[in-house]
Length: 335
Ligand code: NAD
Ligand code: TDX
Image 1 (spheres, rainbow, N blue to C red):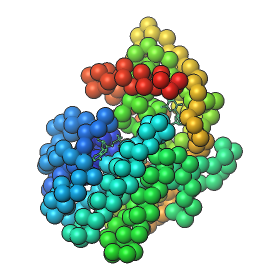
Image 2 (image 1 turned 135 degrees about the vertical axis):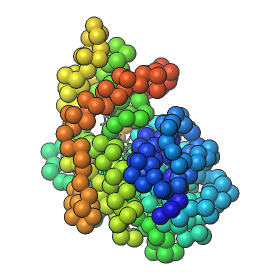
Image 3 (image 1 turned 90 degrees about the vertical axis):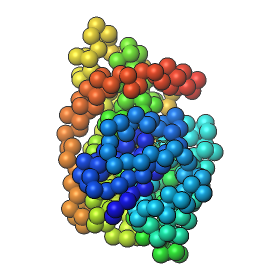
Image 4 (image 1 turned 180 degrees about the vertical axis):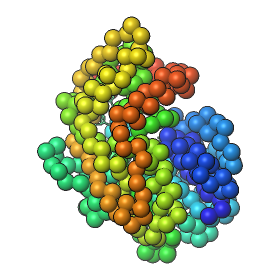
């Protein structure tokens, strides 16, 4: 691997990954292709070396063709990623996550480029709250939201391109990421920044929905491991065995936040749940641990959460300008 195309490299996980590669393999040249939608921020790449930034869309066939001809590997993060938005504006999710992936796949076949596709555990649907089931690589696809359906479609396409065209591809399906540079529309950064602004933390529905949390740096090290040693045609589930319900996450935040909030009181408000909300995700990362020897480093969730709170408190300039817009959009949804 010499030259890497990173789609969506100005977003949350993509920019963390670009930093990770820059720190661990400084000899690799990276081209970041990002449309800089509301979720992308060029400042996320400030100070990173060996990166050429290209502002454009993965749905631009000509641009994708020319970039693909210059690289030997692509890691495909670019997507519309937020469930609440997908419920009100599903079309763009299918344009980017499905059509964009199609265009990348076609170009990767043309230039015989190694392809790694980033996906989510949401493609497996959810389980009941009292279940102990964990998703595995052989769980059936059962997406329940428009976002998850678009990601499921893209996973199926990657497998079909491996079988039909001999594309050298791997897939990883990861659980919920948290950490620095996550957009403040997502649960943890929204809760933190609400508290920092003196707004109530918003808890959807009964607050009992369970997510399986992984620090973004661990997701990056897993992707890196797959790029080095993953087997072509294989899928790897990536998670850190950290299932917690949302109310419990909020309880931890209530303990961590006071030192950053001065006199402001931290309050919590229950708001209406998402339509069709998924109850519980949990995944079994055995395969990547046993086959590739990958291990999560951030195993203390409370510590990772404290560091994340500290990051948002110290990077107010990164998020405060767009906070009012994000909260206005949520207010329109009654959330
Ligand atoms: P994000 O929304 O923070 O970033 C997405 C990036 O893609 C942004 O920089 C955006 O500008 C860019 N983008 C959007 N449309 C584009 C287009 N047409 N062309 C080029 N760039 C475009 O998302 P994220 O949380 O960093 O997620 C990255 C990937 O990881 C996604 O594929 C998502 O499905 C997957 N994933 C996310 C999580 C999570 O917890 N965040 C978990 C599992 C999988
Ligand atoms: O303010 C909130 N309050 C709240 O209780 C928000 C924004 C969310 N929630 C709840 C809804 C979910 O039960 O928190 C949970 C997590 O919500 P999100 O952060 O929106 O994440 P989720 O819908 O689980 O999806 C995330 O993980 C899988 C990413 O956004 C996806 O891109 C990824 O594929």
